[in-house]
Image (cartoon, rainbow, N blue to C red):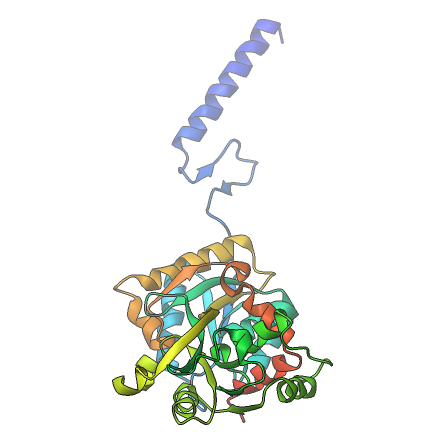
Amino acid sequence: MTQPGLAMAIIIAGIAIAVAIVFTNPLTITVDADITETPISGPVLDDVITIGLIPVEKGQEPESEASALKEFLQDELGVKVEITYTTGYEPLIEGMRFGHLDAAFMDTGPAWITHQRTGAEVVLAELVNGKVNYQATVWALEDNDSIKSLGDTVGKKVAFTSITGSSGFIRPVGTLVAEDYIEIKGDDIVSLEEALEENFESYTFAGGYKTALELLLEGHVDAAFGSDIAPQKYLEPEDQTKLRAVSTIGPVPSHVFMVHPGMSDPTREALVAALIKLNYDENNQILIDLYGAEALVPTTTRQHIGDFGSLIDNLTGLDQKILDKYDKSK
């Protein structure tokens, strides 16, 4: 073929390709009948997403709430969603560890343990009463001026809520350890208990905010630990005036939603975007019915849990106590 003829053939071929592109389905580009069509589509998500939940109460499996969440996510994502309940956090952690679970709703303590053991990451935090945390606080009697800081509670009679209480034990005692007021000589729960005996005149686990504050009001202890709104929530106005907040120790993070470290980026991003739609009025009841949260907000493990996780690490042997606390089979 002469060069002019070759040039003309190339031009004709180019026109043919352009026509083929213009008149082909917009989602498909066809250049030649011998070439397989390649669809242009959005990110490919994982085929199945399995989410773990733990009942709020022993023996509870709110199937209707789980079904509503499942159907909502399947409609939003276009993939199969499975919801599984476990009796405690250890099965959830093991599920994450071995890849049987892709995501889970968790309380802060177990979430930190899961992060430590599996590398799972926090992607959403629950919003409750407009906040993603509440403040741990030291309480004393209004007329007792011997306690002016958290450090002043060392050597005194104190009331904790429970050994797994976030504001009633973990935040105050973990901070005392971090700031070198208390030294734990060992690496197990017995060592922690011995440190408590050595550093306080006496201590008691009251079982809750109200009882701890009542022990304080009755003069059985010098200080009580709990949340910043505990007196307002549990005491009569007359008794509230008898107490004073010695100091605010720091935040206790709200519950979280975690994802497996192996989840693909497109799936994680799509799942987070879908869950945020639970904040919309038309979907919000699904979230409220599930765990009582009013909204979910994007976050990270470091941003949300922050130093609270290191406080758990400071308290030797406490990780297993935290997991046992939430075991609904016991």
